[in-house]
Length: 231
Image 1 (cartoon, rainbow, N blue to C red):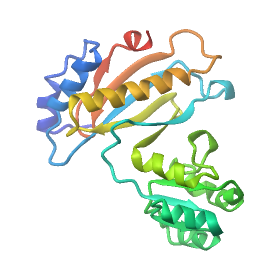
Image 2 (image 1 turned 60 degrees about the vertical axis):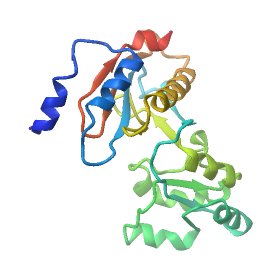
Image 3 (image 1 turned 90 degrees about the horizontal axis):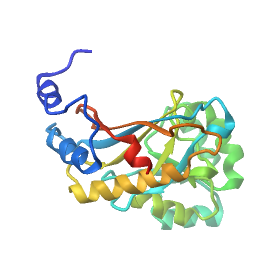
Image 4 (image 1 turned 120 degrees about the vertical axis):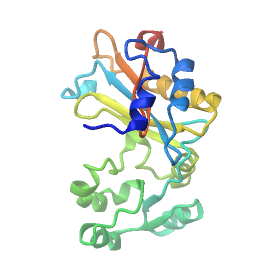
């Protein structure tokens, strides 16, 4: 993959042989962020899990204390009073069966998170092939299948992020924007790492955090010391 001149200049500022402390990494990630837009700061966490085993899966969510810096569009599947509650709580879209053809036939996906009341999962299940691969399928573990749609919406709008293993046992999660102060990024980082360490499956043996890399959308990866993060 050919890299641009700006990326190569920024990459020179990162010592690829060094494992950085959190504060060093955050200061550096801000320094190498000079795209024309406000880049997202992301964490890429390689774990010692084997996701092929059900008892080594990780999936959950955490509300970042300073939010993600992104305006999140939420679709809620609900009926009656719960639909009214969702609208009052700030849902961007609310509906039931009538939304199926719009998503299935028209390819409508103008939303970032899907929430559903438990009674609607039979309907939402029909969208599994579309929502599943995009990570949009509601799930009780991430708090997106719930009767308390108002709380779910409040958490999501406040900056709730979901974390889960991908097929290579890596977790990819945003922790804010490059424009955030170092303090805000550090608080979000600690909230996320704390939640992931708590979510460590009992079946995982050996080192849980194998590698932790921080980067911006367009920037080079900065490796952190996973041993220090685990203590």
